[in-house]
Structure formats: C-alpha cells, structure tokens
Image (cartoon, rainbow, N blue to C red):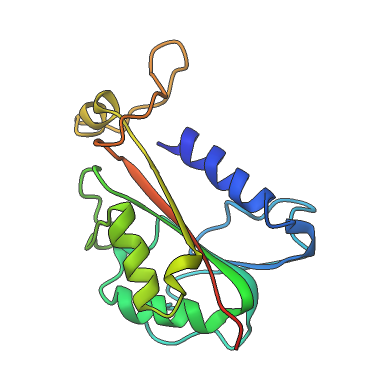
Length: 178
C-alpha cells in the first residue's frame, strides 16, 4: 500500500511546485523533507486536535495522510482543514479502504473515491476541483487481512492495480477563491 501511495502522493505534490508552498501535515512527519516546501509545519495529536478547531495559521497545502479514518468527527475535521487552506490552496487526504481495522487509538471510517470526493465537497471544496485516486489488488487485500502486516518485496508482490479492490484512496482538493 505505502509503495504506491507514496509514489502517487509524491507525483501530486510535485505538480504543485512545492518549493513555493507553505505546507502543514496533520499527525505525521512523513513530508518533513529538506528543501521540499518553502515552509513546513507538523501538527501532532493530541496537542493539536483537527476535530476541535482549525489551526490559527493558514497554509497553501494541508496534508492529512492516513488520519481521517481515525477521527470520531470527520466532518468537523474536514471543515477545519478547509478553514486552514488558503484560497487557491490544497488539501491532500488519504485513507485506507480494504484494510483491517487498526484502532490506534480508534478506527471509524472508510471512503471510496466517490465517497471521499463528495465528503470533501460537503466540507467546502468545489466538487470540480477534487481529483481522486485509489490503488489495490486482491493479493494485497488477502495479505493485509493476515495475522501481521506484510512487508513489500518487489520480487514477490505485484503493484498491478485492480480498481475493484482498493486498499488505499486519496484526494487532492483545491480550495476556491474567497
């Protein structure tokens, strides 16, 4: 899952001219890479709770990678993300789909590409500005439901996509002008 997700999110972010962007990552530090963004900030739970209120700063890009499935109040969080994005800026959200429940601390939601697109539109992003993607295959689904997480081995695991078996879903939403 992470091999393809990382590749696809790298591609989406590269298309945004990241060296000019003030970026924020919610509950993670994966994107804290030297010289990737003009400015980068990580907002970690529990010090920052995206469900409670938007952060007072605004950003050109807000990244919530593998976060929304853990939120008790995803709509509140989506509205807060929208409030944190500058006009013309972006929100990048990814979530698992056909993945076993992983309650760290809770596991609440799953979205298809269509569901994630309309969820973000309901949170304030223009529907036509939302680009989605997904990846998975039946072998990865079977592997994921085993007793332990499986480590990708290039010689053993296929990265072929079977759209009817999505393991991970992502969306890039552009905020409209004020």
